[in-house]
Amino acid sequence: MRRLIVIGGMAPSSFCFDRNEYSSVIAADSGYDTARSLSIPVDSVVGDLDSTKYRSEIEALGFRACSHDKDLSDTELALSLGSGDYDLLGGGEGRIDHTLSLFSTFSRMGWPRYWFMRCDTIATVSGEVKIEAEKGTELSFFSPDGEKTVHSSGLVWELDSFPLSLTSVSLSNRMKGNELSLRIDGRIMMRMKVEDFPHIRIEQC
Image (cartoon, rainbow, N blue to C red):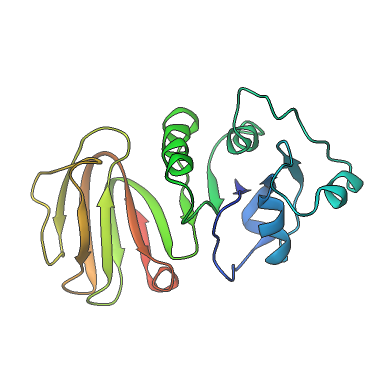
């Protein structure tokens, strides 16, 4: 089972939370506010608690703030509790330095399976991938962790040995039918609209 890490920044306005899908729910600082607003019960709260509106409530639950002068970010502290797969909730539409810091964190501490934000859902995919969705579904592809080569079958603008990186992005591509096949040399991130995510089936072969 995987962890759900909830952080500050913009999150979806609703979230279909299944307790059976996650071994633990960890909130990082104002991620507690996000979890609270979405009625998601948390198992742990970490961070210096300088951003949350509910510090006294968190401390009443038995969680204590760490020092503001620390080596790890609040997100890194959350990821350090446990290991293995995780989904990330929050962190969207915020400061660019925070976003770049998250990409650095992913490279060092592992990539999320899914990253749920207010406007975007991002899936980490690798190897052979099959995707089913409605014709015209918009998808973007990028690699925040070095150059990766991608081959596709089923996009309006096919990726034929396309070198994905942060400087070479397949932006606002579209599915030309209901099925898409990807072959990826490594891991990449695939962005979709948050409202499209429930209607997309992703199979890692």
